[in-house]
Length: 251
Image (cartoon, rainbow, N blue to C red; front, side):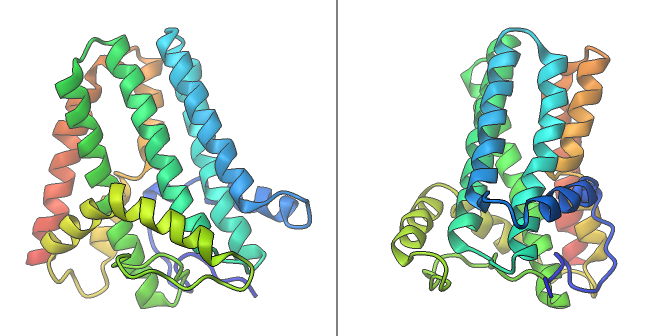
C-alpha cells in the first residue's frame, strides 16, 4: 500500500490543492510505460515554454500553463508513491528542475518588465528561500506522521540508492543538489527554531509560499494585468509571511 504525503494526518496544505487531480493522473499512468523522471522532464519543458511565452508578451497563457505545470509537478511524486518506487534521483532532479524553471520564468518576467539584474536576482533568491521554508516544514511534518520519507532535513550525507535506481546517478544528482540548492535549506533550518507542538501553523502559513498556491496568485495578477506588482508580492507579502513563520517557531 502506498504511503501518502503526510501519512494519516489531516494537514491544511494550501499549496497542495492540485494533488487530487495529480493522484488521478498518476493512477492512470501507473501501468503505462512512463517514468517518474519523464514526468519531471515534462513539467520542466513546460516551464521553459512558459518563459518563452512571457518574453513574447503572452503572459495570461503563460501563467495559465504555470498552473497546469503545478499540477504536473505533483504527478511525479504521486506516481512514485503509487508504484511504491521512491527515488533519490527523482527527488533531487525534481528540486533542480523546479529551480531551473523558476529562474527561467523570473528572468523572463525581469526582461519583460525591465526589472534589471539586481532586482531579478533578489526575487530569485527570495523565492528560493520561500520554497526552502515550505519544504522545511513539509519534511518535518512528514517525519512526525510517517509519511513520505524520501526527502531529508539534512541532505549533506550521500543517500544509498534504492534497488531500482543506480547509485552513480544518485551521486551525480546529489552533488548538483549540494552545490546549488542545499545551502538555503541549511540557512532556513538554522533560523527555524523549535517549532510549535504539531507544526500545523508553520506548515499552513508556509504553504502559501509553495508553487501550487503562488501560481494561482500569479495567474490572478495576470488576469487583472497586475504582474508588474510581482516584486511587491515576492519581496513584500511573501517575505513577511516567511518572517511570521520563523517568529512563530521561536515562540
